[in-house]
Image (cartoon, rainbow, N blue to C red; front, side):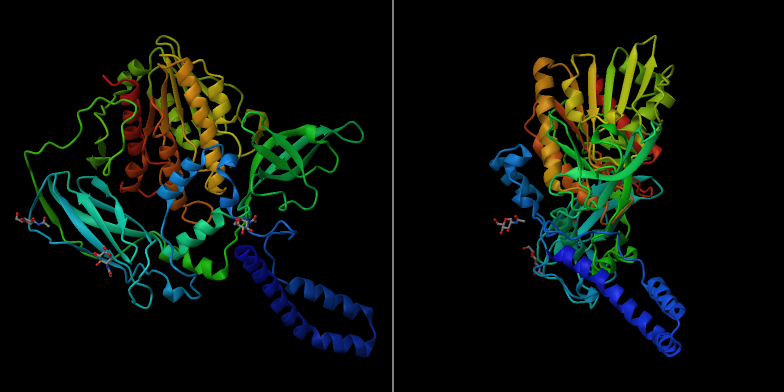
Length: 571
Ligand SMILES: *[C@@H]1O[C@H](CO)[C@@H](O)[C@H](O)[C@H]1NC(C)=O
Ligand SMILES: *[C@@H]1O[C@H](CO)[C@@H](O)[C@H](O)[C@H]1NC(C)=O
Ligand SMILES: *[C@@H]1O[C@H](CO)[C@@H](O)[C@H](O)[C@H]1NC(C)=O
C-alpha cells in the first residue's frame, strides 16, 4: 500500500507545486486576458501551464489492483513446493530489518562513521590462522545502531600478490557484526570491509520484492497483415503475470501467453489492429522506480558499496606446515564452505575440491565427445565465447541469430565437441529477438535425452532480480523437477548449476543483496538433489580486485572454467 501510494503522491505533489508556480507566473497574463478580452492570452496561459508541469513519472494508472500485494500471500502450492520447504526457505532467507521505517537520512547507517577493528591483533600469524574483525555500525549522527540488517562484504587481500579471500559477515542483530577471515597465503595481508547497503536500503529492497509494482517492463512486437494486406508492425508493453495483474497496461489488457508445462503466463497489451496470434518479437523495456525521495537519498552512490574505515594495519603471515587446500576429487554433492577458496597470483585455489588448471588443448581433450547444453544469461554466454575463442578447432556455426541473443552453437569436428548456448525464457532483458527462441530451462531439459556424453549447465539470476522472489522459487521448482527426471532417465548426465555472481549495479533494479538471496534459494532447493553440481562463483567475484561487473573479467572466467572442467573431467 505504502510504496505505491507514496510514490504516487510524490508525483501528484510535484505536479501541484508546478501548477501553483505556473498559475502565479500566469496571474499577470490572466489579468491581461480578462482586461483585454483576447482568447490568445488564454491560449498562451494554457501553453505556459502545460510547459511548466515537470514530466510526471511514467504513466501508471491506479486501479483497484494497485495496492501492494504481499508476495507471502502467494501460497507454497502456487510456487509448486511444500509448505515445509517454503518455511525452510523463509528461514534461510531471513534478514534482520530496522524495527521501524526511518523518516530522515541521518538515522540510516553511515559508511563514514561505521568502523571495524581487529580482535587481539598479533604481530605475526601463520598460514591457516584466522583473524577476527568486529564491525560497529553507526548512523550519520554518529549514534550506535541497535538493529542489524546492514549488508557488508568483507575480504583479506594483498594487491601485489593479486591475492584475496572472502569472509562471511555474521550479524548479531544489535548493530555489531563479526567476521572471521582466513589467512591462506604467506606474506602480507590487509582487511577490507565495504558497506554495500544500509539496513534501511535492504528494508525497502525487501518491500519492493513483495509488491505487485513491476519495476521492469518489456515490449512485444506484433507483425501481420494490416487493413490493406500490407504487413504492419505494432509495439506494445508486456510483462509477467504473477502478482502483477496487468494494471501496468493502459487499459488494453491483455493478450495472454501461457506455457502449458511451466504454467508461466506472459501478458502483452492488446495491439490495436492485429490479433494476439501475431506476437513475433520480444524486447527489453524501461525500468520504473517505486522509490520515494528519501529512499533515493538512502541509496545514493556515496552511501553504496563504500569501504568503511578501520584497522587496516598490515598483517604478517608466516609459512606453516599446515596444508591448505582440498585434495578431494570434484564431484556432485559437495558443499561450498566459507571461504570457498582464495586468489593467489590471480589464480583461484578452491577449497571445494581439487580444481585443475586447463590449457586450451586440455580443454579440448576434456570436451571431446561431449555435447554441452549451456543455458541462462550472458554470464554463461561468456563461457561459450571463451571456449569458442580458446578451444583449438572449435567454430561457431552461423545460425542466423543475433550473436548476443542466440541461440548459439559451436562445433569441433575431429574431437566431436558440440556446444549449445541459449538464453533462459521470459522474463529476459535482451534486445529484440524472436519470442519463440525463448525457451524455459525446465522445458529445454525435458527435451534432452542425457547420458555420459551430456553436460547440462545453467544459470538464472540476473534477469530475475526485478521480479518477485516467489516467482523465482516457482521457476527453480520447475527446473528441479526437470533435472530430477533427467537424472532418472540418464543418471550419468553431468548437471552443473552456475550460481549468480556479483555485479556493478546497486540499485532497485539489480543489486548484490537480491542476487545473493536468489543464490540462497537455488542452492537450498537443490541441496537434496543427488547428482547435481552447484558451482558457487559468488565469492570468486566478490573478493576479486577488479571493478565489479555482472560480466566478470577474463581471469575470473578462467578460474570459473577451470572449476567447471574439473567437474566435467575430474581426473
Ligand atoms: C495477505 O494476507 C494477509 C494475511 O492473511 C491479509 O491481511 C492481506 O489482506 C492479504 N493481502 C492481499 C493483498 O490479499
Ligand atoms: C596471538 O598470539 C598468541 C601467541 O602466539 C596466541 O596465544 C593468541 O591466541 C593470538 N591471538 C589471536 C587473536 O590470534
Ligand atoms: C551484540 O551482540 C553480541 C553477541 O551477543 C555481543 O557480543 C555484543 O557485545 C553486542 N553488542 C552490543 C553493542 O550490544
